[in-house]
Length: 330
Image 1 (tube, rainbow, N blue to C red):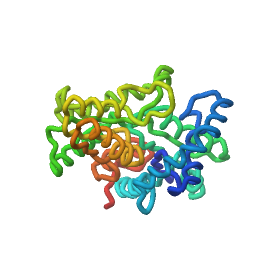
Image 2: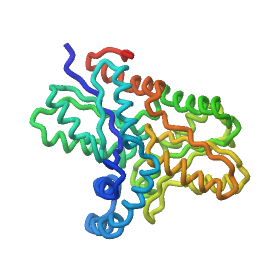
Image 3: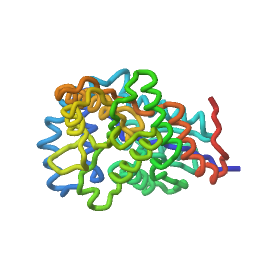
Image 4: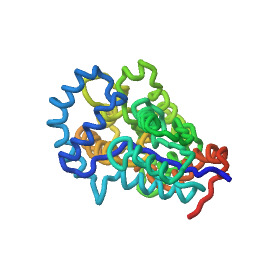
């Protein structure tokens, strides 16, 4: 008889609500992680508390207000993803967040209390980076250090090479164009950026993003002049991975592109960085420089093709644990 097994999908996290105090708590936890900000602890301690936390939360809270519905989109979508994936796999699927609630460590506690002996961790970041997938591993490692009885745990590194994921990303573009047009629009694939020095130290995230974009473009049959990739969400004075998304959409508009479309293959769920940064900020930049229409093509979210792709990613591990192939229980 197979041991009791669970899959835990993990995303970044979210404030509890849109108040400045809630955003401040979230940002303090997020920006205090040395995986996210690599700086001398003594220096960053004061920069964070004196220059960032007194001012940034109010601005960020106003942005969250623009996208917030009954809950934070990323939390609502991640919950829906866990439920949908649970219908396709023969084991329990739950979700947790690296920062904010529900916390990954709390969800691991619950599984431990339920007698789960094998846990498959699936970070919802298609391309590995130490800043994201690595941070998930840190949370798991700290949790393990507090356990007397340690379950068998495997963390999937990433899944950008999964054929069904590439097909799902490409199909989302086809579906959008079939519904809203824009077959001739230039396509920009925008990924969350990291500081250039992180890559210089050995984080191969930028290469994984480039290869992801190339695979999606190939699946779509796009020529080199029909698409590009870029990096968004710069923060602070450091050099980040180029090219930058905001500068790219500005340049395209100035070069005469009237309609462009943007997808974000590094985001498994829509969140502040897609719904506000791309759909609002970068759209405004494009229009201000002569463009006429920027379409944001939504993340895969809980789309069935996305869930099929993730089920296929999980299946070999679950099969090795004696749980057989994926089964759609919908």
